[in-house]
Image 1 (cartoon, rainbow, N blue to C red):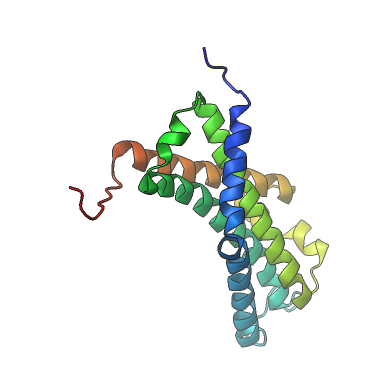
Image 2: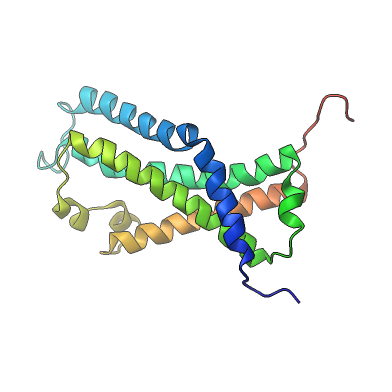
Length: 191
């Protein structure tokens, strides 16, 4: 009998971490540079034209938390779904399915791997963009995406809940496309 939550998920998690770390220029640096370009262009064009909270908050400081959260969610979703689809296309998905891993083990490894990539990219975006505007902690406690979406005064808890649900949904969507056979691949010379 296979244990419900064994130690095999750590190996799969390690594989996932190595997968995005080996191409860190594409998976970590590129999203950070994209967010930086977005910040530079929109803050330069709209800083003098947009008033946020009656001018009490600079537009650049208003953009940074949204860019961080957008990068976290985008990259965590992309990590888990692209990992499963890429494994199917390259034909090595069978090597993930052969070991005696429970569905909980596989789910935990893919979701944690995606969350780690999202958090690493989010920290990178925050570190690079924080130099462009002073961020006031009062802004984080009064109006945050989490208070607007969840009505919670604890932004970290709400953002983690939102992050894990988005990551879990990407794993579910990728698994559904794999199991239903909606992803058809053709290779030259094969029919």
